[in-house]
Amino acid sequence: MAAHRSWLLVSCFLLEVLLLEAANILTISTLDGSHYIVMNRVSQILHGGGHNVTKLLYDNDQITDFRKEKPPYKVINWHLPEDQQKKFDNRLHLLVEELGHGRYEHKSLVKIYQFFGDLCSQFLSLKDIMEFLKNENFDLVLLDSLDLCSLLIVEKLGKRFVSFLPMQFSYINFGLPSAPLSYAPVYGSGLTDQMDFWDRVKNLLMFFDFSMKQREILSQYDNTIQEHFAEGSRPVLSDLLLKAELWFVNSDFALDFARPLFPNTVYVGGLLDKPVQPIPQDLENFITQFGDSGFVLVALGSIVSRHQTKEIIKEMNSAFARLPQGVLWTCKDSLWPKEVTLAPNVKIMDWLPQTDLLAHPRIRLFVTHGGMNSINEAIQHGVPMVGIPFFADQPENMILVEAKNIGVSIQLQTLKAETLAFKMKEVIEDKRYKSAAMASKIIRQSHPLTPAQRLVGWIDHILQTGGAAHLKPYAFQQPWHEQYLLDVFLFLLGLTLGTLWLLVKVLGAVTRCLSGAKKLKQT
Image (cartoon, rainbow, N blue to C red; front, side, top):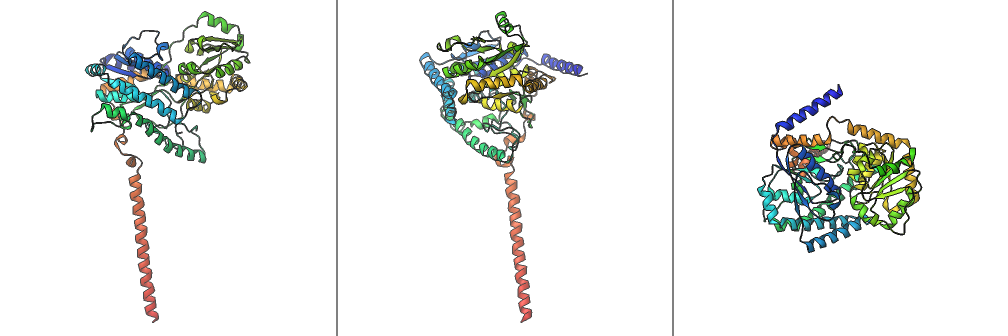
């Protein structure tokens, strides 16, 4: 019965796709690493769904590792003049190093967004590309919500857009509805959905703190807005976020905490899932050496791998040497310190087929940096994790992993071989982690539609209906004091206080009157 229902839903979905005319869709990607990977996948899915896709791509040396295959959709590359590009690349490299070396503070994040604000100004000055985009007459734009420049690009084009949130759904003001602070952790709070009294106090204070920090981040685009928008028509970034027709979130309740959602918010965690392929024979031969002990996969993401220090590599290598399992580690040979001898049970490679290895029956553990894409892939195959979060949303992601009992994390600043080895053995040997990982896998895979089908289906829906006005509550148009009923509370408070004041005055007058009458009678 369940299989028949799933087939019926898929059939209806395919019929809708066939009846819908192809739309012209622009996807925008100016961020690298995992952001490039997921937006590339989104573009592929929309192209496969029958739409004409054009991708606007900021071409820099940070994404060359990912472009091994020619995409099936149209790509518009833009880049700065060579001398300028070199300065921007060096500046970004230093900022990422600052984050990766444990100096992650709010001021570092502000510098990152200041960098992207300057880069955005450079792009908006490219009149030839902007004119081309205006003339292409796109029906819809799909953008990465962390790429704030894309909001300004869309505003210039005057097009409807859909936002893709590449991180977990956290209490971060991206124009999305948020559950009450009593059980929705604020981004950066380190809390779960189960809070005691002092946790809730902390969460409330963090909410106000983060709101102020976010305003500072958004202000890094003020100069760009003043330079490229005429006075009187200058947009406010926080207002532009509310214009999104739909929000796609790169997570789901296999990982995230349960919370209420508005109808225009759709979870699509697991978009990067693809059919499993046999792994290369040399990797299979390596895994076979370790028999039933199996192997551990280590992948710390594209950006982290480029910036990990000699000390980190040394400690990790020493920890892996203490395991009975084989270890496959994504680490470029050119970055390996010459004075560090590779452990005999470790094999390093520039690139590994991560998805295929996570699906391998002999995998025992995934050591990850805690990026959302990697966590989603591990959940898809029911693999427990040890996380070494470096920066950005990675610590927050690992809090979810620990709360769901899918794995544990270790702080980068306290990373020692003994501690890491202990954590890895704990997760491998304690069957509760594997059981929890398999439970999350079942939640993910039992959904009647795949993440790709949900993505295309909802895009088709808003194309057919002319937008998503019917999915967006009126709250998006209300000022904050109306949303939180502060005006109503103040009115009722004033009415109550006024009534009490009047009652006191009346009682006072009656008392004085009775007292006067009593004195008169006595005389």
